[in-house]
Image (cartoon, rainbow, N blue to C red; front, side, top):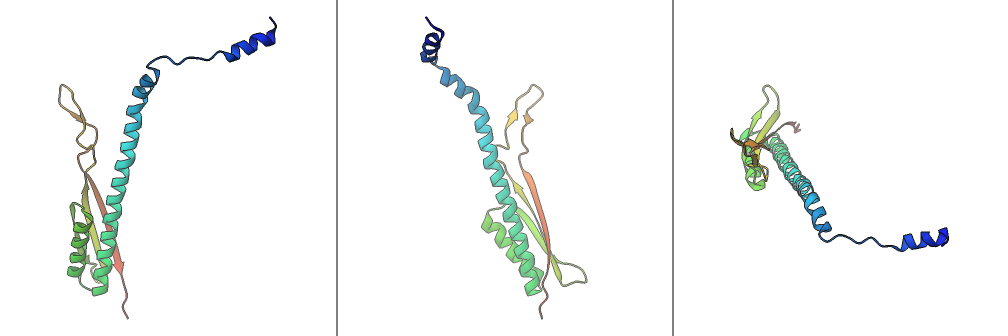
Length: 145
């Protein structure tokens, strides 16, 4: 047999997949893929909570400076906190000796899997904190003429 003939015969041999090979590959890769997917989802939730807190503070400080009244800004901040579903509290106050108003907020973000822990003999070791505090502050000065 010629060398070219033996190469053709080698190329035509197909490799058979072993039974259960796909299942083993799935079992090996699935945990890493699930961790990655849930991390992406939880990161998006945390970013959404941060953006909601930021918008609530900016709107409250702006409202207080427009009406020249921190109580109106506080009402606006409380409304935005409830409307966005955040758990936390905020405060609106006037900057001393200025026409500017400061608003700040601290909300508690709860991750989806914040209560996961590794069980050990000496007690569970938490993988993530149960709640993550998100703090944002803003100062707004609007000159009305």
